[in-house]
Length: 447
Image (cartoon, rainbow, N blue to C red; front, top):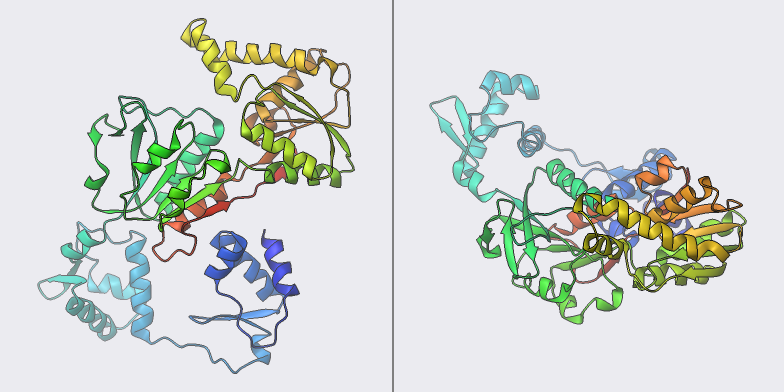
């Protein structure tokens, strides 16, 4: 993505001294994270193609050869203010204790006593700071109360509030959301939604109401394994804060009602034909023209979408599919109904293995076998090791799971990290991504 941004900018018509689009505009245009855009601009700066001016942006040309835009010079008190606020936001100063002494602050910021006192007096008058005696300052409690921030993380849950991730990608999603909140110094509040009772339940198992969350600045919502997303999202419709929704359903289910929500953005990384098309282009670049597509989950739209994408890429595709089941959870449900709970995963995998053995018994050993996900690819690798497959083809899957690294087969990464970054970006009140569906492209990872 960084290289795409660099090459696109270089191919645009421009004149020396002309300003580039802002970082935010580039993020919106390329649907890329701030870090990716910044790295692309930094690369152009290192090449001498563009230069930056603090508080103004980036401009075409070389700074030494173009001087019509003099740099903005901040006053000493402005520099001190910026450094102080950065320390405050990063948690260097505790709200329940007074600020360090004047001597310590003076040494921390390398400023004179007069400049430091002038700045502290200025913040005292603004109401940001309070004072004890003549020389000890603290962050005003009223200001503390106003600046509390909280982000809701909303997932499905059981009737007693329990949440159990059902896939490796879901675990990654939850972990990255918590990490993203921590890096932004935001408090994350986990809430579950139970479809059977239509209730919101916190992690203590207590039924609650969304309107009780007074300090909420936004919500990150997962629709994974939500069976009826429309009533689920309707229950969120009264929220007056930005809502980032991980949309794990067919795109045709993207109901027009939700498009009218001005503060909502839907993020898709799994559904649609894009992953299949990217997989197809990857294989064509490797010189592979003909593939077998193997899916025991072809009752699902995501399996059908991946087949469509492969066909659209120009590959010759031989489908070996089963439309009886829609997902791995169907096999787990069958296993739950017949046998003890502690062996559900083993029995579900055995059911899938038996089904795959029948499906691939007549599959030709073409140049490559594309598996609908890594779980299927891993079982096929096992079948080859057990000599159930006479000649091993090139095997590739979707998900880039830990199994793909252990068994060393290539796989498509759905880029959950970029998904979470974009969801947090949307929570900014001035976000330009509102009210539409954002596609998060992934990439092929070779082992």
